[in-house]
Length: 337
Image (tube, rainbow, N blue to C red):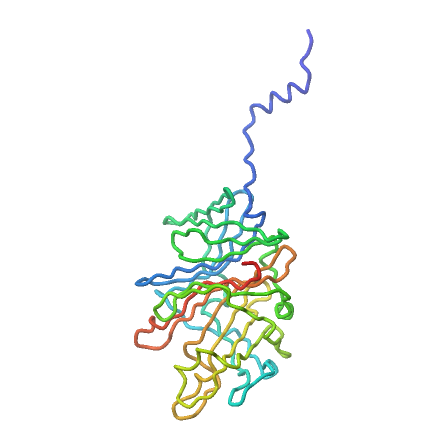
């Protein structure tokens, strides 16, 4: 009797084995994303989230995010970084101050690890990313996936979110534990522009394409992880809240590294004139309703800086009705928009 070829016996055995699941398509081929989300609606407690999404080829996604919302407002906290006068930009008009040596502030909780972790499943279908989070309520997201011309960076464009009304996200295969130092951020050769959606003193706000000239910032000589920019003349801001007779309409701006082991930076902004008291004396540092804007660096596959996604989480400490003065937003600053 003639024996069956060995190869046929092997093939017949494989016919009874279960099929192996195919790997999921990563969004634009990228695994690590930085994400800013916000929910901005009249008559509700608005919130913002900032953090990261990590996608796996198994079809799962893990989010690690900071949350700030009006239901539980938090005070600003110090970053531990105090710029000195070497950080001052060169052009200072008469009557204006130099950069103040004040500890840079950020949103409460941003100095610590994210307080939220959630997992979900995802799929990419026709260039659209669909995410379903495994939490106690329905929460789904949809983003359009867009790759840069060199395919080293992916942008997610907000389409739908069960809970959020706005969002920005960018991803690459650079590790989320890597970052660019401030010297290379300050020397970025591209053109950065700001887009944001938000809530400001009880009103919905939005803007697209605002110029963001990082070259105007200066790296401190004694604090290399801090960038500063004294905006000499504010066109519309820093006037109504100033004491009568104040001539300083400059704005203090600081961008500071929060951690050397991940993407966290923060932007602190306030009007110099707001430290002037009615009796004519001047406080050195503004301690009330300044702008605190946590940010996450956008890096491409080569680990090169391409901007930030961020949130503003500035809760008004002044009473009565402090929530009327809150300033919240989700934004991006990038050359790939």
